[in-house]
Image (cartoon, rainbow, N blue to C red; front, side, top):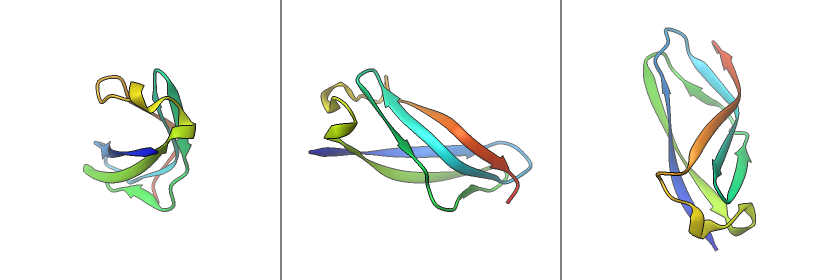
Length: 78
């Protein structure tokens, strides 16, 4: 069993930002992603759909009001 989640990355700065690693977590689980070539241009948004597997935690506890994203590694510029 799995669920999908849509994650939106917003960049309000004047420089592009490259997302190297991020963690999606909720009270009963977490999963870390290392996307390939996820660059958010200046003053822009980028959207990604991710797959959350049952092995990542208890999916019944995953809700939009409790899920969070932690940026683990980003790099400014391209």
